[in-house]
Length: 334
Image 1 (cartoon, rainbow, N blue to C red):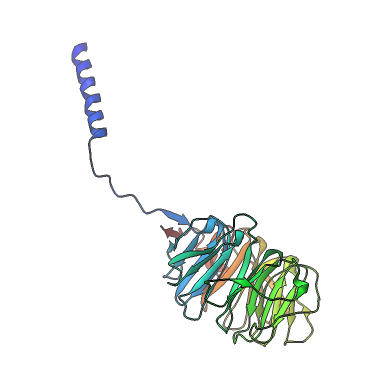
Image 2 (cartoon, rainbow, N blue to C red):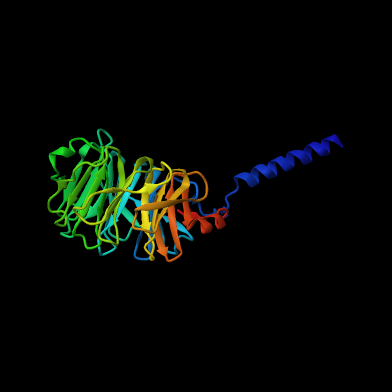
């Protein structure tokens, strides 16, 4: 009896071994997804009907269905450096992404694929913002006074001439009016550089604040709103007018903005806080989106819809939609 059991057990082991090593076609694997509600994103933007988001580890995602699904773009080099800013030409096909270690990428197909233009692991100052001037030239600015320009659609880059007072200050963002005539570059230690001739020449704005500015936007009233750290924001009702400090009830640092059709300005910042202004940026009320993340950017896709990027992923806007979608599993196909 024992012999029979031993023979049976040996046969079972032999069968299992044969099955384990027998050639067979494995079942297809489920698509790998990136949880866009968990990843770190620094920017989200819209180009035509396409949404794009970028951030940590050099990832760029795009969505052609208003954020229902997200797809990873193909990059020629996987540097895993932090990406900060994306901008596109009027053709909505050609665009650039910039970030840390001087990393610059270019796309010619609206963001599906990206080729590396520049990268410097050693002494590569971060590039923080990029924009296309009405002339067709591209400009990019960043840390330690770095400012570059390209006159051949990004093939080659050289120094951008800015006032000497810039020195080694960090420059955080480039902004323009809708017509492209007036431009601002804002940065640390109250740095504001302006151009009133479509970016041909630049002048330093007299200092009115000594802290860091993170972003700027033109207002529908024809002026500017500049904002940054600890709830400091300033409005200029028209070019050349005095800068007036905005009223914000808490020292919230803000990093991104959008403007709704009714004129409401929305700022996004630390602690999942939103700043809402209905008077052109003079006063702001505060709301909270879901979680306690640092909100980095916002894009509006319709009258009552949009997306917010953060260091804890992407979430829908407005906050009521964000709460309703908190359990939704938004994934990015690879």
